[in-house]
Image (cartoon, rainbow, N blue to C red; front, top):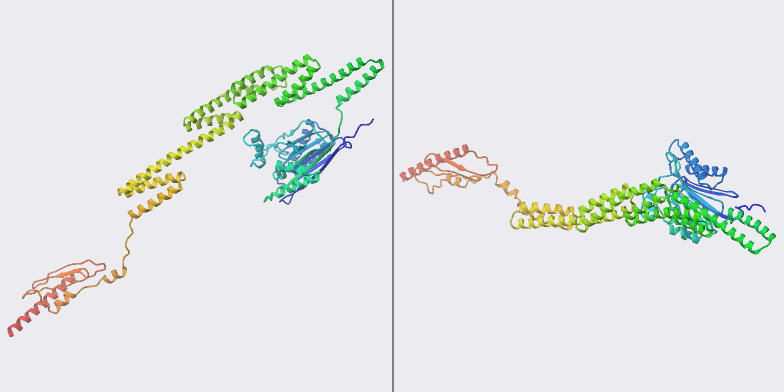
Length: 615
């Protein structure tokens, strides 16, 4: 019987879509090869700005060329193929540094292995459910892994494009390469670049898988969903859909060997006859199958320990131990029990740490260090470092507890100081559980302190306002003005805008009292009065008005703007007083006028006496 061809006895259907979006050039690239026993699918997105060289195309083609030379699902080989593409990009980086993110899927039509560096993704659907989504090599994904942000925030986080790993980076690239994953009939794989998955949520992708009957329909639907968001800028986007309608079904190699051996033994038994012997041989075959599984479980568990996946290790050690009991193998039973106990103490230590029970976590790590001494798959240096961290973790917990007491007693500043100490120590030692806790407590303490400070400042402002009111009632307007201004400044500081406006109104009223308005001046009347001389009295004197005058006495007066007067007896003695803007009459003029008037009056008197004598 000839060897069955894997590709002919399986059914893998593929389709893809790749567009430039809002740009002139598409820097994404997708390629695949499907051989008789192997298939390789690669999608990449260019991360640089070189307009002449397509870094994504170089990456995909280099990986596929290496794969064609030596098709494999080996982790070591795939890592080597990625390294070749990485070094080729470094070599071609003449104008700018060429960079590309990628995801690879390799399958033998029964199982698959995937690898990635960057933030192109693989989605694996089984039974219309999302069974696997690859992790990005980005700062956002790292924050999610550390518990600082939620997993569902990675796709929209500002740091989602800030990558730690990608082909073409300075130095060595460290891609993630998965273990072998068993495929099943009806599985759907989607490889896509960030230009697509940023516009399609996981739930929308699941709906698209449910509604599509073939890979082309799925690729088109994903494109439609992404474009329906109507983003102002659309990045290059690509998606490849792989429908695993039927996998290649094969018997495990070890199982084939045992079946062949059992068949030979059965022939021998039939020759010699004996149903009892046949039953014994059948039991032996079953036992051999259990032993094979036991050893495989143990090997898987040892690998999980090396990867520090202790919970998975405990599970496989337990399965292996169960088989050792079934086949009555006390040696392996004891060995597997001991390994499982060591791994379980490490699982317990992490669980106690998450609960904040540092003493129990310390006890678990101490015990794990003792139990793992005989087994080189356990990294004892890592366990020792974890144990040493417990001292710092305990100090962090003590600071948090002390901060809680201060918070309860209203000493918010003291609580904040302790929480910040705890946060710093937790950050330095990667104490993720404490970081989450202390962040919440610190926010609470700072909020309460801010509220107290605001209330205190409001009380100060209210007191100043009342003080200003008292000064105002007492007529001390300057003091009231200062008090209102100080109160207004505090209200402004604590965002009490209504009180700020109230202070402004009070200050304006005080300003009117301190600086009353000046009445308007009639400039026309002032101008007419300036330089005008009242000569009515003088005219009377010149016409000989002698009222109140006696012989030998003369009285004269003159009046100008303001007042001006002169009086004399025979001789002229003048004095004047005046007030007028623009007055030009001088003392000399006044004296001259007075003298003239006195002389005239004397002559008039002499004439009257002569006329009297004549009569």
